[in-house]
Image (cartoon, rainbow, N blue to C red):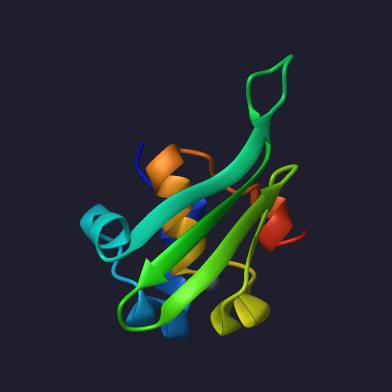
Length: 107
Ligand SMILES: [Zn+2]
């Protein structure tokens, strides 16, 4: 599943982000080790209710990615400023569960 358009747009528009992330899918998939820790699916919809991953990169170390009710969180410093980061994108791409746009850019 390709990146949703609004994420691609955000990567291209935001200078800090654009310099950090390349928009190629390969980059998101292979630069890090992404490990599932725990999670639970909604029994009625079969969608993830919540889950937790750990993302390990040789360069930046280990960060936790959490997903609860459509909202992603990450323990990395970049997330604190932007509400989204390469770790979240990596997990989202791996399992094809994308954050809700409103959780990052409230209108
Ligand atoms: Zn992060």
